[in-house]
Image (cartoon, one colour):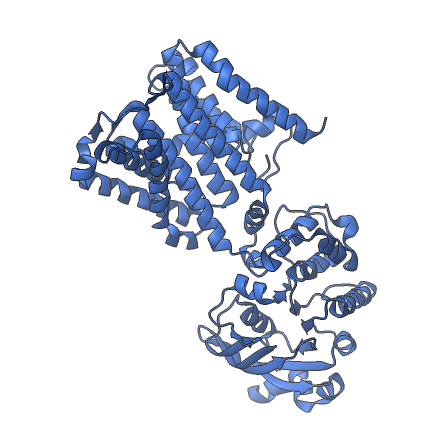
Length: 241
Length: 323
């Protein structure tokens, strides 16, 4: 479904992504982990079109994404959330979803909007102002909801569980699993909580210093010495000494 | 009765007064009718300016360019090619819309940079008009521009005819503005204000939408400019591209409430008519100073403008696109 080959991103002198290569199959759930600054969000920005790569190949269902703007990628079926929720200003929760559906999916299907509101537990907040009248969990749910309203086949979720309490996190995880199963989506999830990743994703990618250093099952990846070093900082210490 | 029904009834009542009451009351008073036409001309540009500012999120200091291009396009088409005046007026709008395409690169800019870029474009168009002497008459301008024709015995070239034309243009512009505001396009435009990138990743072609608002705003302004050219029957570059065609509509829109659909119309009527009928007789020189003080007071006391103040529902800071 999605293939990245040798994707590089340079911000001036800083190489945010060195050479990222991986693919995502239809319906697959992948956890993307790595220390802060590893390049995870940059990778999402590249796939969704927010950032243009310096080099590399990026295909989605046989179409090169390199020259497509963000909105065309959304219409192709790539949905994403932002780490810091970005609700649409001065719109209600339902209007947020309507905008996403009308432009991303090219239709107006109020039944589907209600379905998304139900599955994300937002129905009773549907007519609230999305910027000022939602709690953090609801903001996060709305981020997922906007992406879902575009009827994606690939969903990129950037730390949607970050900052949530343990009980909220568990409930949110269950909702994400329900969303994935209900809409048969492929998902790539950036998340720091290893238990969450292991529960949701049979495959994990580890990114460090802009490179993928491990790719496999959660069990295998989290025992990988390179992965452990990337998290404990030994690599950095060794380089420093 | 629900609010939308009340609003519809109120609108019908106001339109009835505008189309029937005003001609009956002031049809024989050319001076007052002339002032109302001038106020509505400003109102038309103010609606177009507010549409771009409120829906497109862009503050323009260059609407005089669209006004000037629209007026010259229409005048030249009618004078040199014999195009019927009403058709030329619409083509004046098309000319202004086409000229706005040259400004599309400025859509990449934000805030004051966009405003200044549009101002620069306005100067370019004024210079071009002045230099294209064979077509535009240069600095000397155009005289004896064809007036609006008689139709079924009613002379649209007279003050009352002009009033009905400009009133219709303003009403149609405001209704178009309202229709867009209520559509999913309007929702998307409103959503774009704070977080454009977040709208793009859900499929909103934000630059296209902003471009559409710029072109539409230019079209409306161009039609109003064209109307004015045929109404006064004279044009020169300094007049047609005068900064007054930018400043007065902005003041009117802010005074009336640029985040409401009818605020710019109410604002234009209020500031122009009050200024001309009330302040000017008291203070023939410098009467605009009183207007300036009034505008400052409005901004301080009711930042949302006159319309929200009349409804006793002040617009919260940062709110957009509420009628």
